[in-house]
Amino acid sequence: MEELSKKLLFLTFGLTIGDWICTNSYWHDGRKVHFKIERVDYYPNEIILSGPIITQKGEVGKREKSIRINLCKGSGDEHK
Image (cartoon, rainbow, N blue to C red; front, side):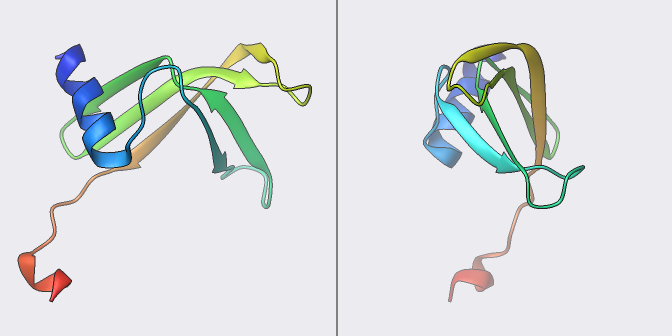
């Protein structure tokens, strides 16, 4: 299942384990969260990315962060 989750991450977002990403924080308006993807988990209708944060100095930190991305199946009519 882990390998399938990694393939889903790559095929959906073009990301792999080890990539650094930046996302908006939901608990601090306007603040960005940077972290290194070390784990990807797939659950029905969602994918969870987790890994250590990237510090302000640009180094891999000790604290872990994760983000949950809801996946939804669209209809073919959306792209016409």
